[in-house]
Length: 385
Image (tube, rainbow, N blue to C red; front, side, top):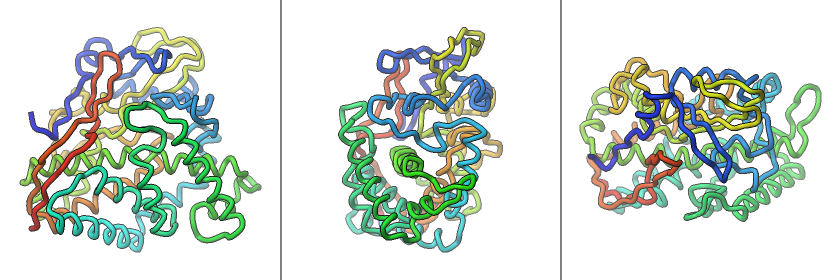
């Protein structure tokens, strides 16, 4: 098996019964595994709600480390849609040419640095800095802020060896509170000031609402982007012919990004709360119990995807749910897509080949399911084209 391969641990359960049973901090969760069931449940907010105690729909649950509601992530329609309409234009800015020019310059600088060194620890010295520096563009905040975010590590709510870390969470909340105070006193053209000045249903957003959007922005696209970037580098190191194909057929890079997101599924699952007694996959689900929408399993469903356990760079039909589905489709998807798209372009232009020298896999364990989501560390040698 290649080092970059991510196997599918859900296949048997998906085929035989369509769901799996796991426990999250002594709280049972029913994992929905089939593509059709995942999409149907994601769309059905009346039976499977996101609007509950802050932190409860996340797997692992964050109820013990935060009380701030992430907006609009932890809301149902119609309120979810009202907030999303307000802030979505800000998250579409990565489509602007000026934004893309700045992002590609950042990526090129980072790749040039590792080519100078020859070898790189991809997570700490490439993917994490890349994600943090790109976030300064999304927030429209000074580039120097990225160094502080880099110091937080790959996850804002977790430390190595711990599922959740309340101290790290508090650090993020304190940082956001300080930045909100700064934006109130000295408004600028950054995201904090945009939110504070926004008109929402005839009023200004209050402080907790602004904080809820910012917590989501920092937490939602951190380890997921890092996983996507790291897994992409690992795959290309073992498939140099793909880099060559990008050089010869740059028009397929968009399809390649979607295929990487499908195959890697940087976020394994996301929870919902059952609002009333119902059935899922012909199995009883009690009111106030938790289900999870297992994106990673749905993205390997052979009833939907031909050769689902292979990366097909130019896959024609790709209805993946790697960025979620329906009204809760990831707000940061445009930003993440641009990072990966421009990363592939720069790698094809500057890098001739890569080689994995050393690595340790990051394995999520959920009961019987053990899923590789990426790496704890991975060292790669890079050769200039």
